[in-house]
Length: 87
Image (tube, rainbow, N blue to C red; front, top):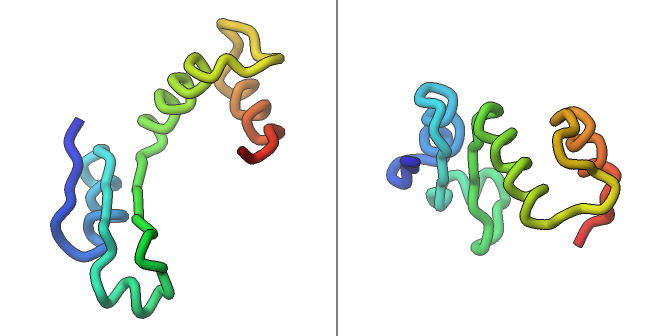
């Protein structure tokens, strides 16, 4: 997996993931922080949908959520994740 860390937030967090299909991580440049009102501890992560499915599956297997059986459709798993209480 590759990640792009250099450049403005609009490029590394938005355009790079769309164009390459890779995950984009932005440390948020001064302009983005100032105009967007981001706090110092905030990052911008752009994850293409096809990678998000794998991430959700990995989280599901690692967490072992109750009520979701192995082999269930990803749509059912996403529905269950949406119902989950925030940690």
